[in-house]
Amino acid sequence: MLVYHPAASRAFAERWFRDAADAASFARAPVVDFDHDDELQTRFLRSVSRRVLDPPRHFVSGSSDFLQAIALGLGWGMLLESQLADAPPGAFVELAPGGPGVAVPLYWQQWNLRSPALDALAAAVVASARASLRSRP
Image 1: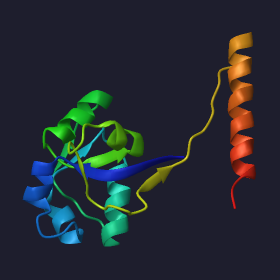
Image 2 (image 1 turned 180 degrees about the vertical axis):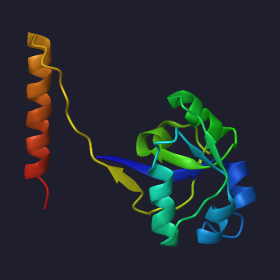
Image 3 (image 1 turned 60 degrees about the vertical axis):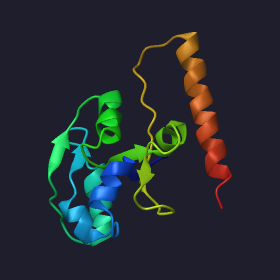
């Protein structure tokens, strides 16, 4: 699973979420989507408001550009836990600290192209997934 959390630059958070990061502020604050198929921010908004919110949206279709747009204060967006952990201290403010975020399952897909290296990689992925499933409560 990949887990994403709503985050923004400190200046953006102070401007748009000064009083609270609630449904009303999320309805007004600009959001950054990766592209028109990106549902992460919309899924989070639904979890916060239990209704459809339609804030102003920017589309930034490059991974590093998406992160940079949020860092520069263009809007808030869903960032991976690892992106938040790897960012310089204070670069981002998590807008729902301690919240569950949005979990996205991962799937293994492999072309029907055989090679010893790909076979070994696929076997390692399958073994890791099985071990992970066995260790769940």
